[in-house]
Image (cartoon, rainbow, N blue to C red; front, side, top):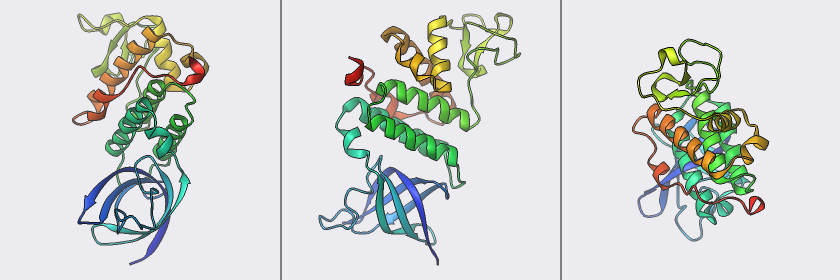
Length: 248
């Protein structure tokens, strides 16, 4: 059974026996994998904190029948300490890795991997508000998975926008003639922010006021929960009140 190496971001861990852990990772080349890290819970473990959630590591694994075994791990991105030091960043990162766990499988997805690593790096560096970073990540991750929302043209007919009726089940904004009765309406500022988060226009996103950010977050949460089986449990714990010090 061969050895192989890959770069991986740790999504979650579970205790196994008295000293081991099962580590679920999203890798650059092998998709999502579950592997055993032996002795990792001992004080003298050679792995240290390199296999904790939110960490990016270069790992060497021994292929097994049901679970692979991690034999080496070297840090590539040490984001865990910075993220866990701030509650807003921690709750946002928790929702990100839970979403990545649900959106990926054993098939490689370089786009999903790079997106998650970039989002965690941004959180660790407090480049933007943690809530904005989370919402942007969720919209992009869902788009990569095939559920890209429309915030300009009608998601049903393709009629050019702007449109104000937003229907999660139909894929985004819809024209008035196909909008269900009572469909919620979004103001131009909220739709503009959502489009900016989806496309990575951070200058526009960072300039949005608190009310617009709050409304956009509600839309992203509803869209995410609809498309992911059983939704994301971490979303209810996300702290939407914190912003990086440079924005204060």
